[in-house]
Image (cartoon, rainbow, N blue to C red; front, top):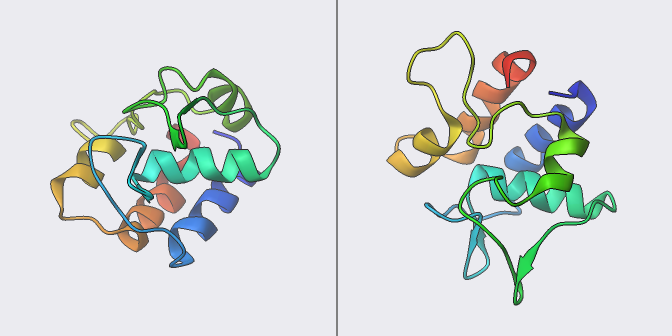
Length: 112
C-alpha cells in the first residue's frame, strides 16, 4: 500500500479519536480498522460510499476510491506472507485494539 497513506492510517488508529466495532466499516459511530482507513480517505477528499450517515460495507469491496487512493491490495487487509493474518479478523477477534492494529500495519504496510 502507499506508505504516506499507511502513515496517516496508523496515526488515526493511534489518535484515540475512533471507537472500535466489528463486522462493519462503521456501526453507530464506531469503526473497524478499515472503516478508519475510509474516514482518513474521506478527510483527504476521497469519495467514500455511505449508507445514510454511515460508511457502507463490511470490507473495502464497495469502497473502490479508497482502494485506489490507498493502494491496498486486499479488500479485508490480508497481510501477504503471514498465513491467516487478516486485519478484519484481527479487528473482529477482540484481541487487537486500534493501537495493536496500528503496530501490525506499521510492520507490514508494504504487503497490505
